[in-house]
Length: 201
Image (cartoon, rainbow, N blue to C red; front, side, top):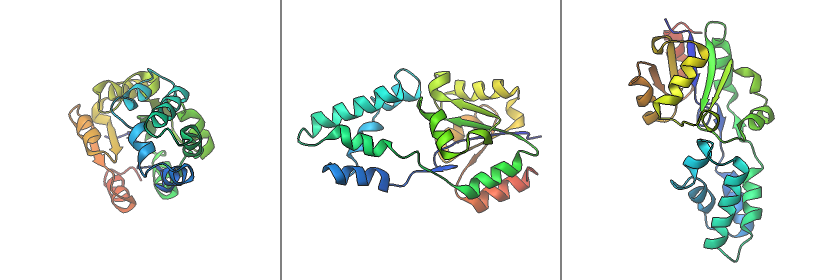
């Protein structure tokens, strides 16, 4: 019986408008995609989402790298503008998951930086989860099996008791290999149908 929901944040509950980085790039004269291309590079992103560097250090390094690549721009200001928003909440998804808390524990499991707690407070959703598993705190990021085990251990559940929701099919596949039921998020209607089928709504 499923009585634990492990849910991703970004792409499921939190929405990031592309206008956030595009406006920052336009304001400073950076080419489109420069910020995200640097921020989410294979050299930089793993460091911050596994807690090897802080969110502040990550953003400082992004600005430094952009300054090297585009020396005639104010890269520090661009990163500041990009960093100002905590994103937006998909209130429909949140409402669905809130309703499930009557029958299941709701656990956030996110590849996130050390800024996650303040973001959740700013978004007004910090109290919507029974537990929060932040990759930068546990030191492992999805799809590493250790982050899923950290979530299960925290909630004292077996893989068979859990459902994992993520918009990244690779992360879902990693969970299913551990015996956790996985669901790749693709919209609210299908999510509601899935949770109804499991009698969690």
